[in-house]
Amino acid sequence: MTEMDSSRHAPRVAILLYDGFTALDAVGPYEVLCRVPDASVVTVAKQAGPVRTDTGALGLVADHALHQVRQVDVLVVPGGGSRGVTAAMEDQETLDWVRGMHEHTTWTTSVCTGALILGAAGLLRGVPATTYWASRSYMETTFGAVCTPGRFVESGKIITAAGVSAGIDMALHLAARLTDERTAQALQLAVEYHPLPPFDTGSPEKAGPELQELALRLIEDAAR
Amino acid sequence: MTEMDSSRHAPRVAILLYDGFTALDAVGPYEVLCRVPDASVVTVAKQAGPVRTDTGALGLVADHALHQVRQVDVLVVPGGGSRGVTAAMEDQETLDWVRGMHEHTTWTTSVCTGALILGAAGLLRGVPATTYWASRSYMETTFGAVCTPGRFVESGKIITAAGVSAGIDMALHLAARLTDERTAQALQLAVEYHPLPPFDTGSPEKAGPELQELALRLIEDAAR
Image (tube, rainbow over all chains, first blue to last red):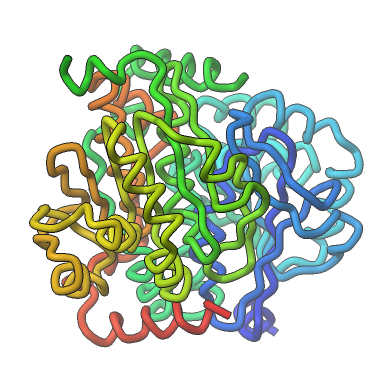
């Protein structure tokens, strides 16, 4: 059975939420994958109920606790603020769950620093991967991932996306893998994803060192 | 006092949630605006508590009820599925609240079919605006808006964004208005918004009529 065959019918998607996750990391993929034909998307956290984001200013509802979700076709692990991601990386229940899920997934995916959680679960050793721009070398030195350029990197059944908004690009690619190009193209139109950012500073290379420093300070200041 | 002066200090942002809203419409702007220096972002709905999205598969928490939030600098009205938007457009309490907020805002904004709610509140008559690609002519004929091309359209203090993902582009523009270009450029890097969609089908013009039809069918199918 090929990867596409095994998930072509009613793919089940689980999005992991944890205290201090970044909302767009989760919602970008959700918005695309929830409209894959017959797909079901569920949110999962250590405990069912509201989970606050890295800024504390927003709550998303986890509809299931970890122990209630044991097998899905697609796992999405969003990134988060450094405190939230560090806590998730050190939480054995979370790491055990990620490892257990990965055994049965067709696709195991991360957005942004979600890759560090995959790394902490031991899934990235020797694996070409990407993560948030500021965490690339940490991912490589700490978890033995092979940091690879790209908006998202597909390595076997693991797909890691770059920071925050890159989850949208990754999810459209994944939607094509789960269905076909035409359906994924229609999903891109469904979310009117014809991006026209007002600046050209979305990558660290384009932005340069001063904007990198300012970006990290703004993130830190907003993480109350 | 110029518009920039009035909101330069600690801008307060309210995001309206309503049953059947589209998650990314709200979360795209949230993710940018929450990191504007000293900004505070709150979620507001008819009742405080979880609010489900258009697919029913995700809940976001509204931290405040409408009557608890009476004055902010920035109002963000997300779009949603046709049932959700229609219900919001017909709900007098919601429309009264939007009109009341608009009296005091520095910026009143919408994403996607959120423009139809601004229209139903009477704010778009004769105003250059945009909305979800499939709702452009409805917005024009029903509410007298002047449908204008663009990823987002700024008309006085009203900024309307195109569909779903366009809220990210709009919010970066708005961040520059609330602060300065350099800060907004850093915010673009903070969310690593260097978009590289796998296809070039994000606008109806690029996608063509067949993908338009398929996109609308996928949206309808996912709206349970």
